[in-house]
Length: 185
Image (cartoon, rainbow, N blue to C red; front, side, top):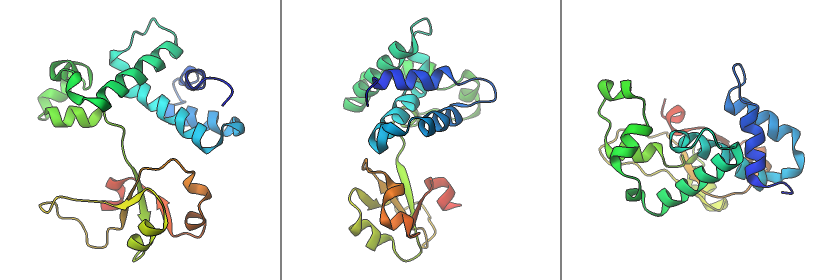
């Protein structure tokens, strides 16, 4: 990638300002840096969003590079052992105070907030199982029996690092990238 991951993420974070939210700043940065490649772009994207997941744990007086590094270390620690971050600390830092009066803020909810979200795929109607077999690291969504989901839901969870936009199945319209909540709606 040439420059360090932390430097790329730092440049994205420096361009976030009123009128330019993080996702727009990231999109603009990645569009300008065509030499990153799919894996590099995904790494920068993950670093930026890891930063925001752990923002309230970071020292704002540190450079963005140091903050990104600290956020990545926190994420790695959490991924290896979610219990390594105390429930009280998560309750104090992961959600705003007003939210606690509006809803139950369980430990499971707090841990989910600190977990990298899944990448969801919407398969063309009737093709989900075939697509899951054809594309590595793609598997049908699993739901608890108690959850009522539409039988037509063709959600697949993707855990790979390949550029999905370059896959022939994407280019031929066999799937699109769409979050799970949108698919259920």
